[in-house]
Structures are given as structure tokens and as C-alpha cells.
Length: 446
Ligand code: AMP
Image (cartoon, rainbow, N blue to C red; front, side, top):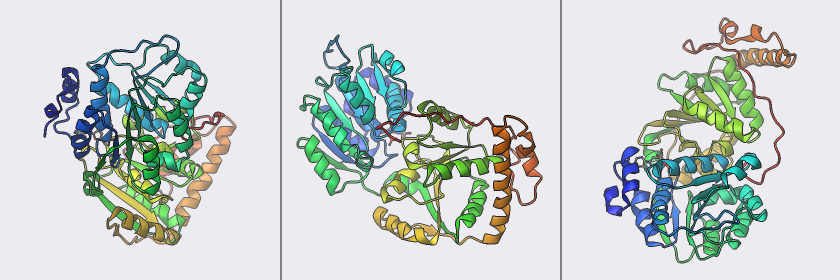
């Protein structure tokens, strides 16, 4: 099948050629004709399958063919796309902009963490596609800045994630402020009883589309686990993995924000171009970090689950689960950051005894076999190496707080110390740490 079979208007066809998509992916093949017919869709498809284009392309076509509403008093979008996280919202916004390159379509994202002043400015003009996280959207609807009564389509992306993050009551309220007779498309990585129940509330006689678990992202990703004795051994194996010759860019997932900060600092001191990404950072800082990662200025991103969702960087060769996720579904989302767009990727999990149960659960859930590789490192080696690094870091923090003289802990000095593995290619630069700002509590992604 080719994209020309869908009969898209010429500017969409031109945009598809411009971004070099040759053939539709399975989710696109099945979803696009149904969306074009106006029917509701309940699709289970994992990240990396091309689901964003599966709903954006036909909706762009539908909106372009409809007469324009004119509402002067408040913003009345044609299509509302709900995303659980700011990063995914921003990724959808960017994809929509690529797909509508040859069209006059106004796309606006409203997400938590961005100043209201800036968002109000964006909301002054006519909006065709509104991409939003539920919390911020609710605020704007309450303030009567946005009117959802005239939307033609509502997309609920990553519904399973919305459920995990407690957004379903918000989505219900958002749904109640629409006319409730718009087309609704719901996407989810996992389809279980709870999701079915939610689907019944929002969808009318939906076409069900299931893209099998055994999708291309799984086939392209080599999945490995290293059983390790303890936390220190985890770190030693991590250092080895980061020195693998085929590593281009990597995301390391940790269980907590604090752990992400700590690990990123340690790796930075080992001359890795590392940076943290988590929900305590301001939206500006998060966007900046993702852009720097996309431009390969950052090689290793140390992230928590929520923040890393929606990251679409083709050069990620390795996803490393420093800590296994608490939810099995998150494993699939995490590893979906690599092996994108037909490339090969590696997913490596560092597993201590108490995490073995979770590893088995993941294998069962995803119907996969994760290759177990024994680590050759001894725990005592690692404690020596890391204790040194940690004390070095503490000193650096103190001297930075004093405002001066942190240069004695530059990476070039570190490289001379025994037992310290340095990446010779990376230049040592003193790093300016971001100042943590007070962030207003948001109902959106944390
Ligand atoms: P998604 O599942 O929407 O996050 O998409 C995963 C990746 O696949 C993104 O980098 C898309 O740009 C890419 N992609 C989506 N559809 C196609 C296609 N038909 N051909 C090639 N790449 C695609």
C-alpha cells in the first residue's frame, strides 16, 4: 500500500514526500481510512509504530476540507489532541507542523510549565489544532479562554498513561465541555479492562485496531539484562556499557529524580556529556535539554519515566534501565526510545535481586525473552571507584556554592586519577548547573 491510496489533498501528499515516508506503517494503513470515514477509533499501538501520523494526517485532511468556524469571543479549535505529558504534546505539535508544511494550519500547544502570558499570546489567533495536557487545558477552559463546543475531533493519546497519571477525571470534565458528538480517537499502548471502561465513556461504536505486540520496534531492539549484586555493581556495569563502541546516544532511566541528578553528575565527572531530564525542571529547561540532546550536544540523558515520554531522537542506540520501571508497560515505552525509524537499538537492564520479579513480569507481559548476561565485575572494585568520584563531586558542589574555584575538579584532573574511565574524545568543560526554580504545582505531567 502507498500513501497515495488514501486520497489525501495535494499539500499533505507533498509533505509526506518531503519528510520521506515511503509507505504507511501498519497502524497508519488501518487507522487512516477509518478516521477519514468519520468513525471513532480505539487503537492499541505502542510507541514507535507511527501512530502520531496515523491520526494527524487524516485529521489535517478533514479539517482542510471543512468550512471554517469564526468565533471571536474565545478560541474554538477544530481538533483537540490530549497528551499525558508536555514532551509528547510538543512532539505531536512538531509532527503536525511537518505534516502541514504546505498548508495554512494554525497549531498551538498548551501545556503546564509554560507562562500563561506566552500561551495567551498564542491563543489570540484562530486555532485549528490544539494539543494540550489535561491540567493546563482545564484551567483555560475554566477561564473561558477556550471553547470546546465546536471541536470536530478529539484525540486521547496514550490513554493508559493518562489513567496511570490520574488524568481520567480531568478528561471527563473536558469531554463534558465539548458537544460530545465529535469524532473521538483513542490510542493506548495497552488494552485492559480499565481502558475498555474508559473507552465506553468517550467513544461511540469505535473501530478497534490492534497492532500486535510483535512490532518492528521489538524486532529491532536487542534486549539484555545484567544481574548485579548491588547498587555499586550496577554503576560499574553502567560505565562499561557507556563505553561500548556502538553507543551513539543513550537514555538512562532511574526510579527517582534525585537518583537521576546524582547519576548524571557522576557521569559528567567521568567526562560523559550527560544531563538530567525530570519533572522538577522548568518546562523551558526541559525543552532546552531535549533540543540539546536532539542536536547531540548531550550524549547521555539521565531521566525519569514521565519526562522521557515522547522523546523522538533517531540516534539513540541504547536505552539503559538503571532501575527497572514499576509498571511493566513503562518498560515498553522506555525501550521504544531506541530502534526508531527502522534502526537497531539495545535495551539494557541492570537488575538486582529484588528486581528479578519485575523482569519476569516484563517478559511475560511483552511476550519476549530478555537475554541474561553475567557481569564479570566484582562489587569491591566499584565501591572504590565510585566512593572517590562521589567525594569529588561533593567537594565540587561546595565550591560551586561558594561561587568560585570549582576548576580543580574539572574533568581533565579527574582523568588522571586511577580507576577512572574517561572518554578521550570528550572535551572537558566546566559546566554551569541550572538553578532550580520554584515551579508552581501543575496538574499536568510532573
Ligand atoms: P510515532 O510512533 O508516531 O512516535 O513514530 C515513530 C517514528 O516513526 C517517528 O520518528 C516518525 O517520524 C516515524 N514514522 C512514522 N510513520 C512513518 C512512515 N510511514 N515511514 C517512515 N517513518 C515513519
